[in-house]
Length: 89
Image (cartoon, helix red, strand yellow):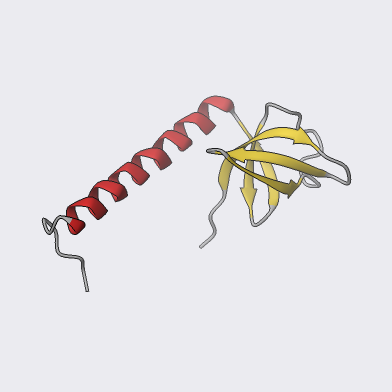
C-alpha cells in the first residue's frame, strides 16, 4: 500500500528540487516529475518526490480529513490515558 499526501509548494530550489509545507513541516522534495509546478501549487508527495499536481480545493478537503483523523486519534489517546478506554491488545 502506498501513501501520497498533498503539500503546498512554497519555494522552487535548484536541480529540480522544491520546498514543500505540510502543516508547518517543511521538506525538500524532487520536482522532476512535475516540472510545471509553481509556488502556490499543491503537489502530491510520495517518498520525497512530487508525483502530480492537485486541485487546491481537493487538497484542502484531503488535508481537512487528515486533521479530523488526527483530532480523533488525540481524543482516543486521551480517553485511554484517563482509563475510559482499554487499548486493543
